[in-house]
Length: 126
Image (cartoon, rainbow, N blue to C red; front, side, top):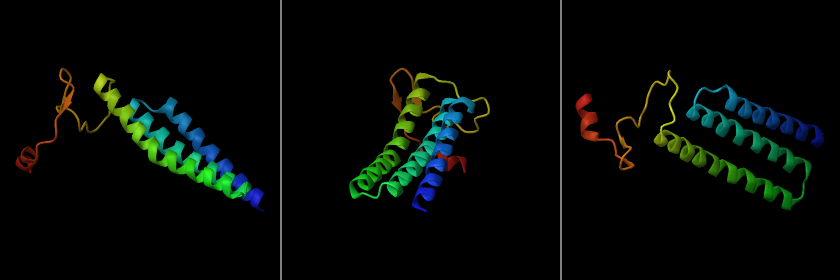
């Protein structure tokens, strides 16, 4: 029974990893690719680690699998944010149907300074 449950977790994890890899090819720009790979990749790796914990019931393997899950959950979104931000700053074009560009007008390409939003200007718009 444990083998069947572990197999289901493994297959589900592999499915989400496949979705993440397809997202790299199918998504139109850097930011949406980063979103697809981060979300599906972390979920897929987490499900695979759950399968490992179920199949190998040793405490050392469980601890290592939990460490992998924690590490990927904490670092993957941060890395995707850093890569997406760096791509934006070097001028990687956004998708033509992008609705909102929150950094537009706030980044000075010559000095490489990112300005904070002006709360007074936002109040005047309201």
